[in-house]
Image (spheres, rainbow, N blue to C red):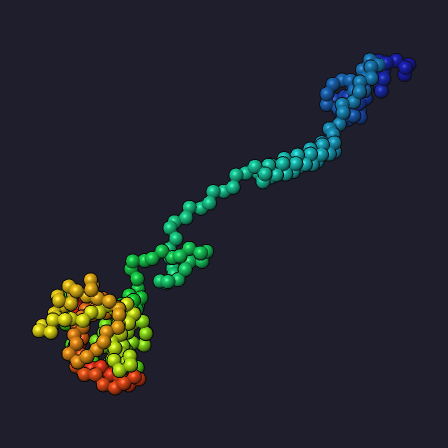
Length: 273
């Protein structure tokens, strides 16, 4: 038999005995074949063997795919995080209710704003405020002024060379403020003189039959009174207007002394303004 005949390749009878028969390596069969009468080439045609399953290649592809997916996920995640950090709107501030003051009265809130006053102060603060008000001295009240022409002071008054008198004080005394004194006395040769001081106006009342009243002096002193010195003698009556605007009447009762120890004693009435 010619082994070159393609019909007799790989065994006798052209494929009945070879790799493709019914059973094992015996006649009419192939090498564990299950699928036909021809195994490795019936009638001289060489049929390629079926490729084996690429189990190892599949595992390699799965590993490579997993690595690629992980890389893509990492890149996408990094991009999304950076985008959120750059473009995300800031979270709105949490709603705040009205602040509750925990400061005590008089204490300031940190930050420069003063704590709002609370109408319901503590009993201790209220008692302290009441005690402070109670300890404050009441403001002095000014008594109502006396009607004009009311006698403010009346009596005997001595005026000396060294002791001027302020008729606006009651009783009249020498004021430590020189400009407040109204009258002084001195001698000119042998004549004793009454001197109106610091803008005081005076005149001699010439009606000896009547002592001038407040109305009598008021009617003449503003129009006829002067600041000229007056020669004194016992019984002389003078109407005057003090430097504080009060009317006064001076009646000479006694004159004594000379030069530096001259003294005049007067009966004086001072009326209110």
